[in-house]
Image (cartoon, rainbow, N blue to C red):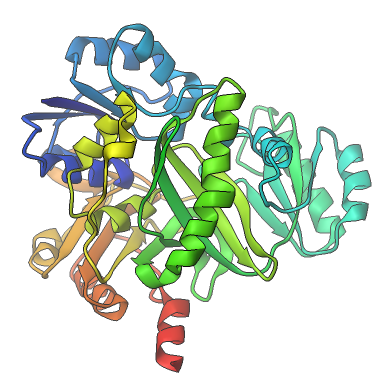
Length: 431
């Protein structure tokens, strides 16, 4: 069968890598892809913000299965447009993707369906923010309502700082806007204390199948300091969540979400990414994503021991109840090598060296997030450049392999955190 993947990041490289291993896949196409994906798929140029252009590509390729990776095409309604043309496509519709594309929609949905989440207020002006924050104790979380590539969340240590962050989001300045266009509304939220967990599930609109859990690292600095990124490293082990807790999350969060979306005439078929905070009062939903996480996908797929294409197709066909995943025991970890200055201003176009040496290390895969082939030379083209990913019997072994590979790779300004998985390693060492 022929598979078409939309996207250009590390998530899409991992998806293409996993699907290329399927005996069923005879042709793999990625639009627009990147320098690394070119090694496993034929690339087709397209802008991920151009709905008509993506539809044109999909119709021309006429794949047996189309997989939509990033959030922007989902929010534009790419799945709806392809379904209307009779194409088999994996991903939620525009209405279902609002769980990610609008944080205010998601918070109100959670409240309507009595799914545990932090207390919140939705505001459209700085004056409304000023009134709302009187009901919150610092720290206060201020969130952009729309898509912000994982960087629209500000944790404020005072009410004054929350007001300034809100003004920056409403004006557009905080997310780098220069046209004076900002968020039409934003969410003020209670700050939750605990450990974050990424809990991803597949759904066919009725049934839910969980993937292995993962823990992302959002902050750019070691010790979880500095500004938020789109994700700078992640690990996956079975010990992140006990089986009883996984079942609790499925019963009280995942299944009610899928059931609630169906009841609201927006059935959710695709990947439901549930960002959780494990608090003293139990798991609380921090956010939803309507697609595979990045870099969670890289770590999770390294542990998958069954056919990804079968599972994605079962979601599209409404056969997920018949599907079971097989997982490799042990652990996996992904460490992001980023451009110097990310998530702020950074330069690109630097040559990347050392990848053949990194590939020699056992159980390591280097997924490309922001690379481009320029005249036959692999160069940096984004903030997150590479996701160096390893699987092993233990988390420490997986991390050791990943860091050994990273030490063989070089590009100008290359930065990576050296403490990914530090909380889990500390727990394991204290036992």
